[in-house]
Length: 172
Image 1 (tube, rainbow, N blue to C red):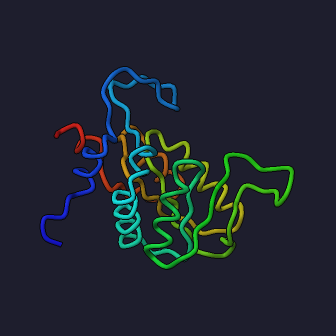
Image 2: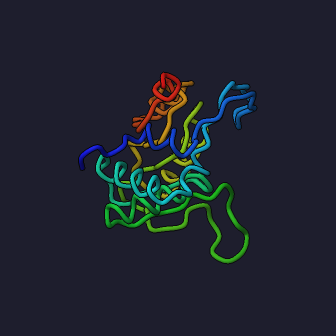
């Protein structure tokens, strides 16, 4: 497409970055906050991210950790015409118990994330998917905060592929 906006431009347009004083999930204090969850409520951005993920990854199933990864997994699955799975934060003791929703056993799974910082959520997702029998070698994230996720995932044999690095957002 001619003059198609970049993911970075769309993130700025949909106000995915805010400045101030914030405490992150990791406990770290930051002068900016990356709010991908709210930005992804815009169909144009969600569709574009799903398309980008689907074109950059080789996978049988795409998975996302609840909550932020779920719409990304759905969008990616739709763009690729493939199944998606959900990694719950905790197992349920009612209904269909377990942490994983979806058919991932023996399959190559792409894990998608909204934001990676230290990599904790992604590591949790990788661990749960592997324990359930999936092969996971790649995590894709919309924004990497460049604060250790690449190294943490590499330590367990997983490559992190960001669509945008936070340094690119801060340079604008």
